Length: 381
Ligand SMILES: [Zn+2]
Image 1 (cartoon, rainbow, N blue to C red):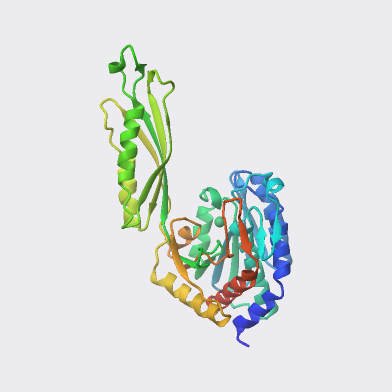
Image 2 (image 1 turned 90 degrees about the horizontal axis):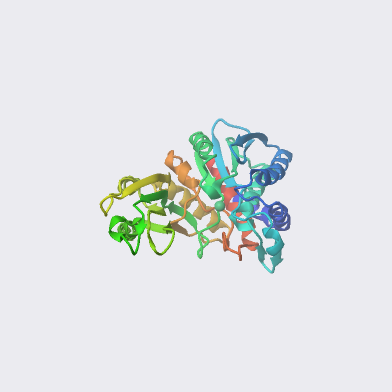
């Protein structure tokens, strides 16, 4: 039997254990904004990984939960596995949205994005260990705690660890509906616009006012006009606010802007345009802050090569592995930006990330974990 099929057989027999571990992890709620809560989940992960023989480094990360580096030694050289322990779900969500199994589906906050992925990573390594297939290179499993808020406290660590790695495997959910590997991700920017005008009585002396809201309307029209679907650029004003009362010319207004780009060049061009927005009305003051916080993950030769490799492995266990691009970002954007070839979306198959019907499909767990294990083995040799 080929190695990938042995790995699959081993993992398939342990699907129930994987489901149990995901259930256990999801039972410890870990919203990004609550460092102490995330740390309870990190504690659990640290215990599991230590028992499995990893040497652990736990790093404090501002007011986020700790980042965990679990190293399964060997070396020289290493393959990086990347995941996050935080979720978008507030504490108390479990009361309304308990972890539960219905047929082939496992529901619950964070099971799919991405505690299921973490458990897949843990079991992929377990399978390699059990079958004596751990490659000569080290396997480094980096688990961060602030991915869902843009990774402000882990970005540097991710870049640093990626630079040391031959390749990175990101255990984020697969791209649906094809259960695909994500071979490109858009770059992502966030900007805040503040507008200052001048207040005046809307009935008595409106001509003395300068409406920040009128200015905002112009700016929104302009910003949205920058969207170009052909080249993959989108600009979205997702939040706008301003004014105080209907009979006052609004003195202040503001907006929050989301930018997505397919290439670094577009990222630079758009960032420059947005940071240098010009007032439309006379007397208005504009202030723009923000920038590109995730560089684009482009479909490079290295990315295609990793995908092809995974596809070949998948075919051996009867899985047709597709590829897709996505507008969403992940920590894979950072590993790619430092030049480390990355296989992203290697995690669970399911649906409803960040939504109340979040679930993963249990029968895919062993298959996906086997592909991850097979990739670690090939890359680490
Ligand atoms: Zn995620």
